[in-house]
Amino acid sequence: MLIGLCSSAVADPARIAASGIDYVEENVQSFLTPEGPLSGFEARLSLARSCGKPIAAANCFLPGEITCVGPAVDEARLLRYAGTAFIRAKLAGITVIVFGSGGARTLPEGTSSGSAHAQFVALLRKLGPLAQAQGVVLAVEPLNRGECNFINTIQEGSALVRDVGHEHIRLLVDIYHMLKNGETPEDMRYAKGLVAHAHIAERDGRTAPGTKGEDLRGYLRALRALGFQGRLSMEGSWKDLYSELPQALQSLRAQLADAGYT
Image (cartoon, rainbow, N blue to C red; front, side, top):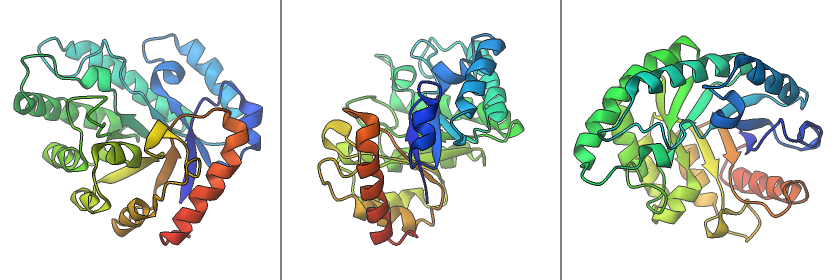
């Protein structure tokens, strides 16, 4: 199992290089900047590469103003934005883009979940071929109910991905969001055959594994039972990232080993 960090390789490449992580998960909006100049992206990419770690994934796909459900969707802008994001992802070596984007995905008042589901499925069926053309997988992330009011659970996310039916539209499992929702490891059964990427953090304070001693092994065992052998990113809050990171890596690797990962 490869363990990554949701962070910026641009901000401190030397310390990223010295860390024990396997890869970096960057930010679409601040790193790929799909509506920004290519020259700026190329400069950031050059700096990020100096960290010596693969830039393998990126999150924060859409800014809040580029809505993807409801009556005010600017589909032409969204597809342009996505197309550029996927092209730049390929240039960076990014193979997974995480589609959380709670602000862009929140249902406006008066929009039913049923109509939004159909609208989102139709959009993802257009995004799938764009992602595929660049060798990128778009991983839909169920978000906890405190952050978004649409596609909250693994069951809902799995149903959505199956309805889309495109091999480059997959699912992300985020153990923190599952914990916040009160979902159990058994709920992962809905995601069999769909998971492309995973995130992890402890429930209280979204802290790194090992910070508060929360036992996450049940969720990791369930992930392994799905046959998942992809990448797992630590995404959460840190008081002092680089002093806390070694303990977090040690704790997570120990829990992964106990869950049957080698």
